[in-house]
Image: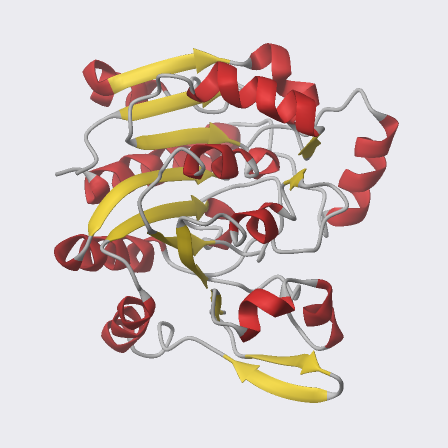
Length: 295
């Protein structure tokens, strides 16, 4: 049962959501990690990752954890490491985040590391539309975990992937054309009683969220319906979300370059009156997600 909210405040994107804070204030714990923002964003050295995780997660209550921008999604790995019982991870994301490291603690490689945790029995990735598993791009990812069914890929739009040699495989989810069949498909892949859910809002349509990455078209309502269905059959022991907007800022030239190369867009909120309405979508999404998880 998810009743508590943790805010890991790297970038101010969650603490700026006054309605969310006011609505759930008695349930919220806030950890101010703004001093680590530059070190934590995009990727982190193993030593610094261990330091930040110890600071952020030591004594943290299980619950719904909001981490900020998708640039910090690798800190989901630190959260999930704390669980010792067998887990299925249900991940909603526009990107698979499963690239083979050089950087172990990287927002684009953390799922590769996640798949090697002994307590993680399976990872189901839903909502992919970024192109990262299309064609030959697939081979840059965790092919081993896909082949042994440790990772299940359910892209929102059909994908033709080259898995072995020039052999192609069609990957798709039933969600878009038949919501109930799509939810049943997800549930059929859950292999443990305990489930952890991670949501990167970049998989959501622009009507439902505003992020600093290119976005997919998955409706928030589909994510909510899926969470409610999972909750009826399994125990959701923890959850997190990223994808709240913050402007990418770096001190490291390498991170500047990496950010420019990785992002297919350069997105900033409109500084006119639309600014609040763009970021308000994320706040409303967070409220809806917690309400779905609660109880």
